[in-house]
Length: 274
Image (cartoon, rainbow, N blue to C red; front, top):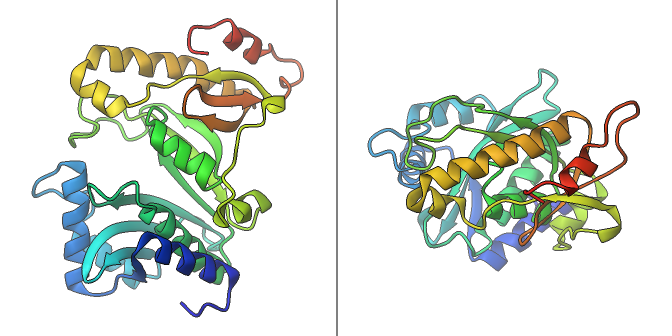
């Protein structure tokens, strides 16, 4: 990276703060290491979410395959591919950080590297999906990165057999990261998005650690998913916006009810998930 673009400098500063170096992956050995890391995170022994061959092909055809390194060890991977024919949007398919290093800002640095890469190529939007019940991902995507929630996608991938998702519907939220939006620029500079009480009309709660709950009480985890689906999906479908995420209270919903429709937020305020 040249450092001539402000986004480049943001990525370099974030990398220094996280104690990593960031670079594109372009060697066969790097692709194998990336596939192994992703397999270890998703609990798929011998069946990586992305194979080394596919990673190699994605990189060769001008897509984003980036890595975070501590010394010579690959500790983070992010993969995105072009989602529009005019190359003005990117779909970030998967990202993972080595177990034990998740809270050390490596993921933030890697996303800033991805943002700088995209902006240098005229791409202004990156989209991706995440499980709406994973509170730490919601806080990261919405609060720390400044991404905006677009849609609720029920059981988006269908049945998944990895250790994280097995036995549960693969519900996802689609978020869009508008790379040169003022809120995203501010977030890149470390100004985390906070929930403005004046904008909030309701909250949709999620459990503090759905991954632990899946292991300890799968039935309760499924009940949580049904409640969040019943509350958040129709609200988003009616045009109600997620205006923030509070780790204690969940998704903050705001905005006026769409003209001619019932006030879904009024219904939520009386509901058990608020």
